[in-house]
Length: 392
Image (cartoon, rainbow, N blue to C red; front, side, top):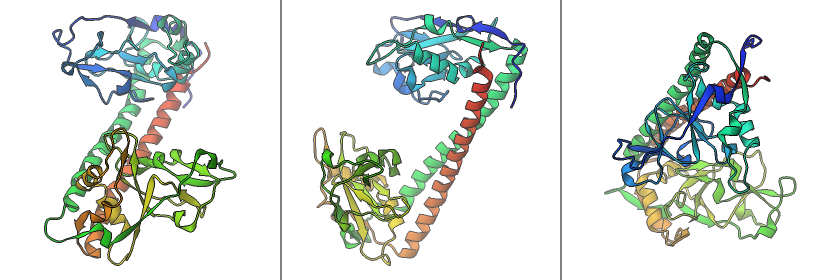
């Protein structure tokens, strides 16, 4: 898409938007029910998906209104900016922008703030070592070129339609995930009658013991799967992979689709402890696993499918069993001797395969729409940066 900006007018950001600092002493009595902190704004996401309840208590007093723009002035490199879609209270580390309607269409302002040009300038003008912050008086000097208000409306509609497509896919993903959980819990229920201990089907092997001195790099070491590779509910995070240059044995080598579980959790809420991960295919590279991780090896694949066990260990009732057998105060440690005692449904391979196929279909659809969201988001970013990223 090519846009000719030659005839557009140059504005400073301070001409396009005002920084509002309205505050109230008692938000609840003033009718404000929700508050937004920096933790509620997702990086590079223009929509607020979470918030806190004022009735539960908050020290925030800064007011924002629907259709204003919230910008995280602390640690601007986190790229936190969002459109307010409700009235509320926000943190003092959030700047509240309102469009100056003489020069900027309100629907266009959130896209301007999402541009690389805006974030790069905010980062450049931030001051402070541990928690750098930028100021509106500095942001106000940043220059943008904008067309007439009539042309701005066309641009806002164009960018809004792209954003709407991404949001529609996100909502679909949310509904698919909800459906997945319902079907998962309904398909693999906690056994009441026909059951067997998990130990009848699997044997457990612990990972290797190592120290930080054994760390290597990608060129000289082998991949090492560790707790940072685990995500809640069974996701695998490739960014968490470390590299290991020490000694190991064959029992510490993982294969594609090996099932591993987290033995430890650094939090008290059981985020990953006991949750499973399926090892991806790493093209014949040697992949090892740490002492904080255990492998579950199926004794007889004619009696249990690895994919079925993967889903079973993601059920709420199985996770609660793991959590209940993970003592600790600041750090949870799964009691591996209790894992083989977990009572599981004793069903046929055919029934297992039917459940797996049903759940895999949903997860494949979730991934398909995630890929579409990524494509639409990339298109949106390119459009925003082409429209608002030019020199003035």
